[in-house]
Length: 343
Image (cartoon, rainbow, N blue to C red):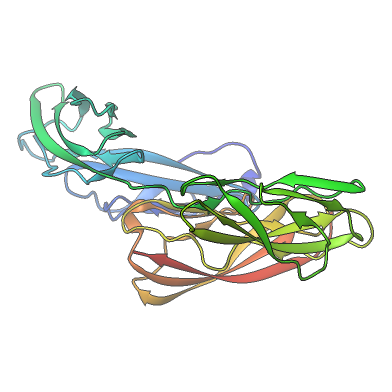
């Protein structure tokens, strides 16, 4: 594997998802191992230089070592949810191993199939659909029809989507909080203001008031939809000036839940210190119940916590994370423990 940019001397490679191939990657960027059974395998590789990382997915095709006939190995398609992005990989075996895929019948789903066999897209309506695929290896062609079941995703859960409040730099402060999902209209309220900022949160979601003394403030807000469903979130607010406020990780300790065999990703947030960037570190992971959590990864630059789909296992996991200010701003740091449930 090859990469460019960043600090080349500090490249560290990691195979986040081997697609069931059993292959490994060395620190010197070489993927190796015993070739698995003929077919197509989805691999996800990550490279980091100590301050930033990048990941990319590839499809590895293993050719048959004999004259086995070309065939499509998929016997069914994973179910999809309406209005939710869908991705799955079709696999073949035998033949020459030089596979080219095509979608002959989409049945109105709007899904697309690329030449590597990756089927993706978003289906808007629940129902049962018949899809027909074709694979060609340059010598022969095979076709297969499979049924895709699209389930009703149901109403979107009520969520506060405001993650960070803008810093207060003027005498009069104003910001608008936002939510999505549930059934509108929304009603907002301020549940806790432990540092006595004096701000007022109006029912419309407008946060207003006279800027208090410089420092770090934590506000716990609540939004309620028209059916009485409520959610809360704690937001950090920095009033600029005076001593640098402490770094605070403001993401709730109970992370959004995930699903088995579906890619998981969420963004961790912090506030405080000086400047506006942090270095994130995953200090420890523990399995409270279920399988091992070895596939969890934390992007050091952007705070993106992810787990590749093929490795996501049911269970309850505890993660300890640290957020540091970048060198040159200050040395303050915060540590917080999170709980993640995979169903």
